[in-house]
Image (cartoon, rainbow, N blue to C red; front, top):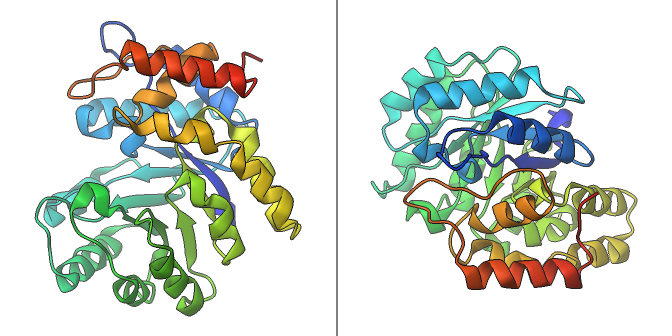
Length: 294
């Protein structure tokens, strides 16, 4: 799975004022992000997947397949808290042209570690493609522990984990004990450099929607072993990262994309558009950081 090393961008889903999918905006985004990312992640959290119908999700996937300017690998998000339903969705999905499935740990149910293990084991058995685990306790209300991740790493077809626990000790435990070909992927933009330093494979990123070339630089410097310059690239995102999530993801990054002329900022309820005060702060940060169109 070397093709999924580096930066995966968790693509936003652009909407117009009527809250319909803006496919021109999506094409603009694909062209923009291709400047620095290594693969596309379709229908992750950042794509507002929970508010899209199944037909809309498939339409976005089909569009990305057909408008992929550099023919980058594609990861498709299929997850949920009903194991059998997830299995059926995987079996029904048009996965030709997709390279892997990203599946979030079950949310709301708060399963035991054994339940989490059996959930992903069933998904892997049903999937014709490699599976990337997604651990994001802040959204799911349960954590995939390091020991469960390592146990799942031995399951055929489970090839990676997107770790967004924010727990570096947990991530180090995975990094130090994982099979050589199992990938540890950062789910937190600001920990990208740290993940590379501990032997991680890269990041699945929100901010790469707006700043793909910064993530390319972080990867390039770390690959060369120049961790000091890699850290300096990472620090460029430090001030703007926080405001991206204050009112929900992808509310903040869609303001940046609007200012860059890529797509409009509209989101679907229950996510509200960014408040005027947040918009003002993000725009001021962009000026301070010299972020502008082109």
